[in-house]
Length: 419
Ligand SMILES: Cc1cc2nc3c(=O)[nH]c(=O)nc-3n(C[C@H](O)[C@H](O)[C@H](O)COP(=O)(O)OP(=O)(O)OC[C@H]3O[C@@H](n4cnc5c(N)ncnc54)[C@H](O)[C@@H]3O)c2cc1C
Image (cartoon, rainbow, N blue to C red; front, side, top):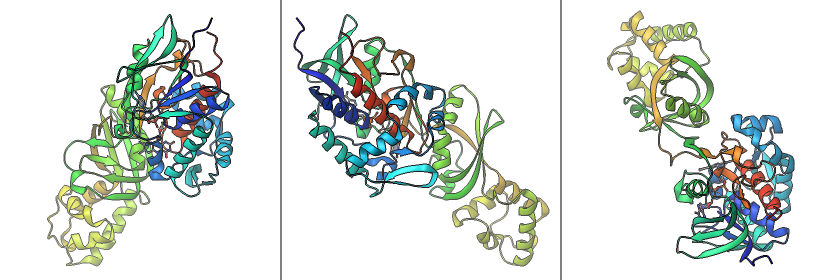
């Protein structure tokens, strides 16, 4: 006779993946317990997309999958079961209308991530999911290669036929995702691909960035060199900070920089703040401005060309005295000005911290998880969903779609494995 369990399904973690998995399992008639260690559901989801929640993207499935790099192939089967249109239809059913923005990014039309989080939880709750907050899972109970349940940090054990691990990554720990899932999975016999932060600000050596801290550049070109070989050429917004560089183009390419530094290679960034002008055109422009400037200080003339915060730094770096008049600028000095504006050079020393990444690269090795069901190939009845898996993409709504899709798949299948 089958032993009676406390629940059919325990879902660990009330993020997007966990709420989706729990709700789907409950809709199929399962008794579902959702365990969340913080005091609320969806803390990270509520702050996504600058609190507006970029929940998915218009890219087609192939291009979408490519955003996850090599690991993306794992998502193919999940996306065949539940992809963007299914997600949009799902949320439309909850009363969440959506709007497409620049870059195909899809947001709730009311721009309210907290509202979307609330509606998602209300849906799961109405489907019958029982929630326990302040409940931190400390151990997975496994016997003879099958899941039996979980042990909470207070020592209480709860049994279930299936456990879905949706514990998230190891960044923004204040939202609850502090990497517990990796430890739990490893203890249960899973391989953890080394964790690295992605979508993370980068530190730079020296104090050049610091001297311009707080300065955003809206239309910069950033070239990144790995051991002197150009590897990245990006245009867009960048920000100087007290530790180095941040902003969209830095975050987008931070994962590649982090991994290259781990390989022991040197990473150098060159920032072109006048990408619309080539060196010859910029030189001509300077000749004209300096001529017109006459006895005026160079620093006054530079107001036409540079943001205020950059002028003093530029003059120092180009070795031009602060009180030098325009008509005394030599051809050498002018050349230095051109070179500096076309290539502010910074040596990248590493990511700001693990914690400050928006997503975690690495995680539960995908080869050990059935891509069709999300069930562990090592522990029967153990399922994974969301960022705890070795999946990470850049910004654009890809990570949330992956969390929702894998959560949906785990929720659909977790009742039906053979014991
Ligand atoms: C600032 C920020 C903005 C972002 N914006 C976007 C965006 O706009 N679009 C996008 O696609 N992605 C975005 N992301 C990434 C996205 O939020 C994550 O990829 C996504 O939340 C992962 O979902 P998840 O359910 O796997 O994990 P999480 O959302 O991290 O949820 C995991 C949950 O598990 C709980 N938990 C962990 N360990 C335990 C335990 N031992 N016991 C019980 N509970 C536990 C945690 O408390 C947490 O509630 C953003 C990330 C950040 C940090």
